[in-house]
Length: 322
Ligand SMILES: Nc1ncnc2c1ncn2[C@@H]1O[C@H](COP(=O)(O)OP(=O)(O)OP(=O)(O)O)[C@@H](O)[C@H]1O
Image (cartoon, rainbow, N blue to C red):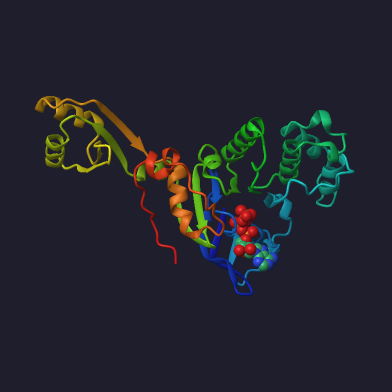
């Protein structure tokens, strides 16, 4: 379990982390999301005692990192896939880490097998692909069999097979009852990997929810095409729907689902030419939530056909960011 209480970090005039409070629970994979510069790395570094908070605290299993006597046995972290010396073999790298933490050779062999690096254990890390270096980082994090595992941007730059491997590894670590927290700035990567999401923007917590809840919460609408839009609008409004008309004459209906719209139109003899249920993608929702908090945004607008506004219903930001 990880607990943050009013955790704050200021660098001169910049407030990188702003009174952040949340809990990361065991047995689920939690994603820590936010745009570039949102404060994810700073927060993780404070959790690991690498940065001193300006105010507040980060507790791992009830204690500050500095108070943990054998940290590798309680918390494993991968902050940088390139932390291993390129001239060392994977085995030597892990054996050095293990030795300095009182961990035996058998455990080194076990974690190498767990991450699928057994066959290249004697090879120099300098020749490893990014995916192999990520696996090695995770092996190092698991050496002490910790209850808490933290990974900063673990899927950054990985190919599809690497992402799939990380995903299944994190799921099995959570299934063993561990607390698993990984950061990313991409919702699309997180949506299929994590159970819960903590979203931050400009150092503040914007959302603490499950992926399922986030999917369900955002309004779904139904696009309806009919040659008799005025009559259908009156009919659907009587059923409690909110109906708006697009420039093309289609109806966007919220509050009544597609089968009910079809049934109502059929019983009134109104022809329907198209009936399309739509929902906002998690990426749309996430971008909308964090847009006000993004430090760096592309200024080139997306083509209308692929923009969030054109392809999905309006999603309202859930909290105001000041
Ligand atoms: N050592 C530092 N000195 C001054 N400012 C810093 C320092 N480290 C981070 N910052 C600032 O703090 C803010 C948060 O940075 P941080 O790296 O934690 O964000 P992040 O969410 O991890 O971003 P990214 O996704 O780009 O890695 C940024 O505005 C950054 O410029």
